[in-house]
Length: 195
Ligand SMILES: [Zn+2]
Image (spheres, protein in one colour):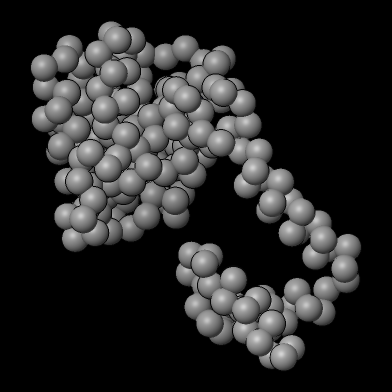
């Protein structure tokens, strides 16, 4: 009986990215040997964050209010387009980059049956159409899906008076932006090219 519950706990950890059975097993055994207070705190914080953090109605990033702190306090004519909410914190590490953000919540990926209508492109179009921006910097990962998405956005925004740019290839093909160091990322922003 207790084994079933341990297996269930192991299975629960396996929803995390990069966590296979062995790592999940290590986490499960660790949690069981932790004091109750630490485990209560972990479980409570996960539930609290999940129930009180939603999406910013402007950029689509995570926030606890209707509009996030970046959208409500910052002014910029540069719009940085990213794939996931976590990428905002990656781009925020680039010193001197004063931009607003737009989160796509995915990339175009024919292999996963994900088309242009499955990501937040309609919202992007509306924001660009409002005339609030001079440049749209597409900062999706330098992999096949990220490139395909950047090309699609470039075509989509052709009729508008905005410059569409892409991060320079400082980051090696197929790697994840998340792991790029600040210097590499800053260079990729500085040397961004028009597409
Ligand atoms: Zn926002």
